[in-house]
Length: 197
Image (cartoon, rainbow, N blue to C red; front, side, top):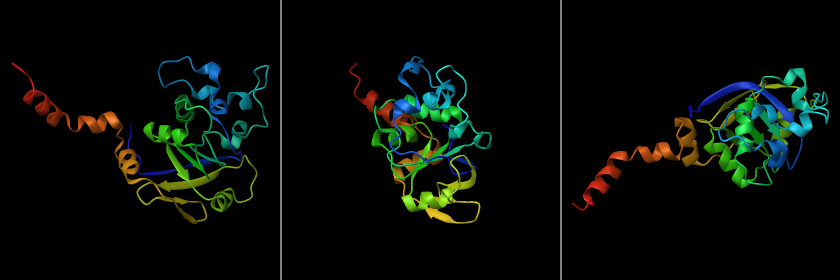
């Protein structure tokens, strides 16, 4: 994964609570064996009508939200089944950061392991970010993982907590295999010491 330190981008608001993983990526699309290509199916049942035409009322279908890399949403985002395809779909669509009041634990961990930064802010802070605008209006935000801050276009700063271990992993672009490979020489030495000739 590429490292994550600071990101500035457009943010789209999805003012919904308890968005489960089957809404993020419906089960009928869980057929691929790699991580690519899921973005077109993200929020499929909300993005499209039953005949396949785009739903113009859905927040992410509005022209002003196109190209957003930050998603601002409600509480308990990513609840439901533990499918890792949900963060795959969000990332393939273009989201690098998700800001919510709370996340389902497994979904939160799956995001971090796939290079998406999930940020928890309070309900009041999220309301400030949304600034009483319509669901579809975009916001320019700067997010610093190093400083653990979200800064809006007015200069308001919102601090967030983040686990130091996962912070280091995201900043360096490491996954658990990358961490293991850092000890490759020690692993080989350990194995060689125990080889029976």
